[in-house]
Amino acid sequence: MDGKMNFFFDQEGDVLDITIGKPRKAVAKELKNDIAVRCDPKSGEIVGIVILNFSKRFKEQKKPEEIDLPLNVSITTN
View 1 (cartoon, rainbow, N blue to C red):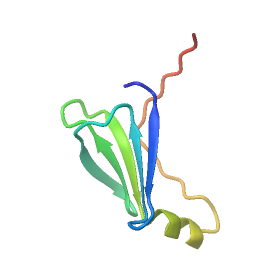
View 2: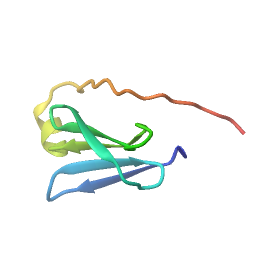
View 3: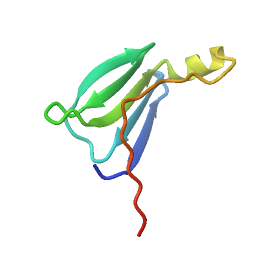
């Protein structure tokens, strides 16, 4: 995975789509409350996150929502 993340917000659908690395085929697995991770079907690697009702959920909340994501992060320096 190259660490680049791309964010796309569909205002009409109220969907935030976060892609990690280059776009590729994926299978979505819902975590909870209209939040899903997109995983590579062969490796199981997380390649994206989708949040439905994105703006609505933050207007209704008084505090940030915490979500556990099954991610491994590696940080390198040049």
